[in-house]
Amino acid sequence: MSVLSAENISYTYQSKYQKVHALSRISCDFEAGKFYAIVGQSGSGKSTLLSMLAGLGTPDEGEVLFKGKSVKEIGSECHRRENVSVIYQAFNLFPTLNLLENIMYPMQIQKGPKVEAKSRAEGLLGLVGLGDVNPRKLPAMLSGGQQQRVAIARALASSAPVILADEPTGNLDSENSENIIALLKGLTKNEGRCVIIVTHDLGIAGQADVVYRMRDGRLEGTEVA
Image (cartoon, rainbow, N blue to C red):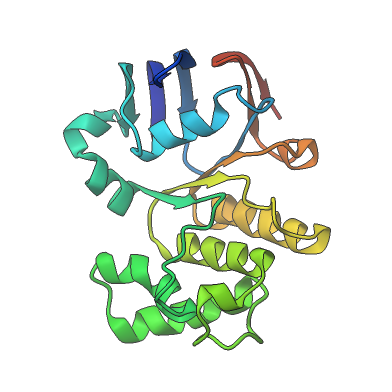
């Protein structure tokens, strides 16, 4: 059974001047313990699809399901808090919280003990290559690549079974990019999590168990390793 799936979902952006059919009858399934890549040119709809899977938007038609249950029924806030963890392309770190507090946040809203949350957050900083950075710094004191790694550490702190990542290595050099992808792949093998990445990097896509290719808001093809 799929841990997360889209069933014939469509979505249209409406602006003052035009309608953009971002998604058109997309159906795809995602299983636990697998690493997925969603690829396509800019404007193909891949980031919009990720947003729908995360419960950050509601499809005009069709449904997003978590373990067979509609996200509408679960509630989008509950879905984001318990079922999925999102790595945003724009980081979305809390500017007034320091690095440690940003990473601890998902564990605190899941009511985890503060001492354990702090210890795990410190470990995750080391895991993403920031063990030598002062954890009391604010996000604005870091480079873009460092902020991206903090955002990744925050996503890993959650116990959510699905990790959704929008261009998670876009601000990283090749060495850090390889380390992060290896880390995310390790979560599928060692913890049975489902990892779904939107990427332009065909090298990353080549490491995925399943690749979904999108074009003009439609699912153009599927490749299975």
